[in-house]
Length: 353
Image 1 (cartoon, rainbow, N blue to C red):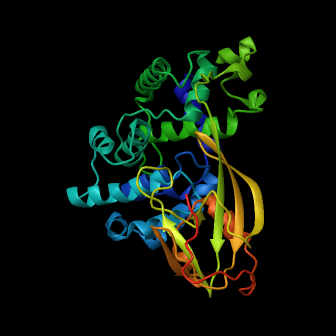
Image 2 (tube, rainbow, N blue to C red):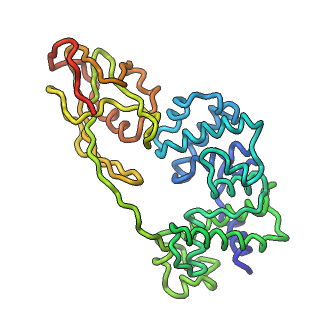
Image 3 (cartoon, rainbow, N blue to C red):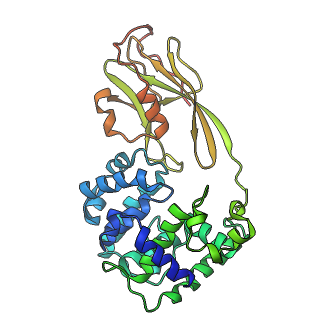
């Protein structure tokens, strides 16, 4: 059997049952692809289910507020995906429906080559090959390709190889109304996710063992190759949770950063007198940096003046505000106690960053 037919045969026996694979609804498929960008299926699935229940159509999602979408997204990280999802829903509504070409799909906010190929093949039967981390790994190992996958040359090479394999699908038909291209793409991704895994791949039971270059040459652990180019920076943050008379202070992160549109308590480089340390050096890893945060609780005797951009909210309403995962840790560590301690003069201005 050829590479493509072997993958399809494996998928018929081992493919994962997922709810977005049981529909040809372009909205449900698009939503799943955006949620699953840089997110494991077991983590993303409940988010997809909640989004589909709350906003069952692209029209409903487009009419939601950004705050509502961000709040529903809370915990998934990479919040630009949520903002792009919301903006793309508005684009789709404005144009009267989903685009059905790769070019049209790529015009949507947050949709690149991979996502366009996935939606195009799954929803519209387009002969477009997907290339994600799983596909890179399977192709690199099977064909013995050492070109780094995160270089321009590597991306072009793997994209061309993946696309060249599609003609081998002629004569096949997909299952349950899915095009053979969509089924093959799903098969290849599942194969990488469960068979040809990053660590401890299931080589003894692999149907491609006889033709796999990496297995034959003992290079499984070497492939795929990824060039190390990212320099990770560290930053230390100090957050103050102000608790006064059942209220606390928040601000919305401005445009231009990774947490745009999310909320946070007082960020400062000076701790008010009388504040209590709750957590210290809490580590939070982002793509380009590692954050270390200290969390403090401050319960002033009288209401302080807030820095520009901050506003008072009832503690009972905190669930309405979408916050980064790091801030969730702060909220989870808060003691449920009555106001006490420090006396300050009315109108004192608190320090901030």
